[in-house]
Length: 448
Image (cartoon, rainbow, N blue to C red; front, side, top):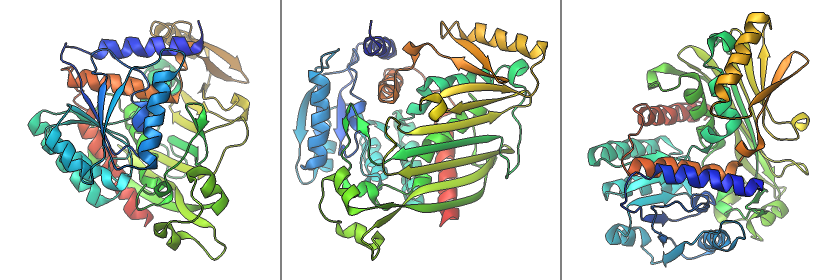
């Protein structure tokens, strides 16, 4: 059985198990300007109506979305059977709210519009699965807070797409930290030497679904895409809360932002054309273009903060394209009193994430705790093992669990649809979403 078939089978099982009643889910896609909107439909779960209504302006963004869905329908392995109904009236949002052709809206596109879309949808009685970030400015966040209030009042499900919780090395980083004999207690660290760091490197030019990704031109505009400090950092702040204080409600008062900064990535017109197919800078980007005709977009951000006294560092960097054979990377450290749990994704790891367990002192008691933890976690991840080299232990994860970033969207969708069907949303989920965005807005203010 190939890896692709294994991954598809795993996702189908997850998605089917999430459906708790016979009432069908009817999907609506609203203004899909980002490829994440399509990835939600990469796998076709049972209990979901194959007809998806799409409301969006006509143009290349909609065309790219439809092409991705068509690619899922026509692929050789486990093709989907989506049927799309496209609505492109000038006031497509009002038409969607009037038609109300489904019960779940997927939103992934221009981030400057997202908070307004979310609030309008929940006011109309629709469940919403939103790509990150839900908010890129404090004014947006005010609308998002109101949307969550309305959703609670109407008993609707409103969540953002947190795919990184399903990356297996991150799941295992979280799980190994829950064994006191192995990890000890989470260190507090210092502002100069944080106990928790998450560093992410992304690229404007990349492959998605095996093909070169075409970016919308507004992706380079901080007023529409958002600055890096409130974009990819959404995932990283979410993971810090989810890993360090699992199943606990985190309040804004638990967080203190210490420092924040942003800086630019230079993009030439040739690079811009390669990723957008546009020959000239649009007017809204011209203020960011220097005399050398190079765009300076504030695509990088970094901030430090404390979470319940634990010092944390978050950093996101965007390059134009990765070196040959590489891709986006993630480096993550949780430091405990007995061991550090470190995900590395560099050349030594062939640019694939590898979790290492790095003890402060590997005595017999610690080794026994390590073996006990591996044995326990093998119940969920059969075949899990560790391999020692130079005083650290690499976690060996069976390849069938490395299903890839694109497949994680199906897992998130499965969880979300389960909640819509009646599965209880964890009590900590919504409060922690609000705290996450509050943290990002504080960093946004400080960086400015």
